[in-house]
Length: 188
Ligand SMILES: [Fe+2]
Ligand SMILES: [Fe+2]
Image 1 (cartoon, rainbow, N blue to C red):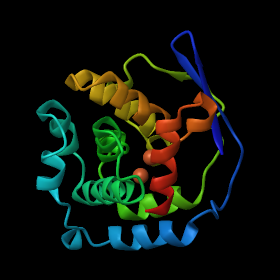
Image 2 (image 1 turned 135 degrees about the vertical axis):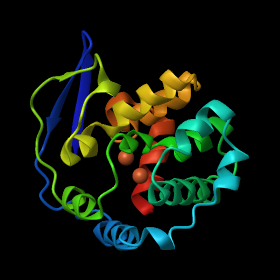
Image 3 (image 1 turned 45 degrees about the horizontal axis):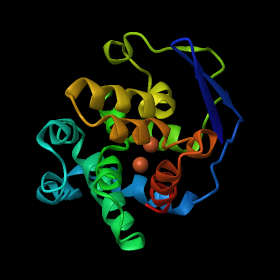
């Protein structure tokens, strides 16, 4: 598990090495195998558009078609498991991985970084977060922060951005909404 804390405009990642993220590995591999064939991805963008305000939909639609499919699956699974989930939580589910849009979708990279996680001990500068080039591993580790910045930059709701920001480390923040997104994401 990767733990994060922020102070003075920086975020410190204190990651344990987990060479194989065995938890839900089969589900993860399943998703990655589907990801190899973008033409097979069928995101229900109309379903997403009906649930996202225009400014947030503008971020959603910039995602790769495969990430949009995953996002809709997570949001629909959320409603299946938590039928009274708030609109804000559904919007966070639809946008939780939007930070990945800053790097082109290359399926081999996704498989590699999805299986291996390396500690990142260097403090991360939050300034200029949306104006850098990222490696695949950096996107893997930083997309919650990048996604939150994208949502805020677009004029999206701050609480949606906050849940997105916390969706990989929800228990560190004690954020019950982010815990739900994290756990449903693990199932998809
Ligand atoms: Fe994520
Ligand atoms: Fe996800």
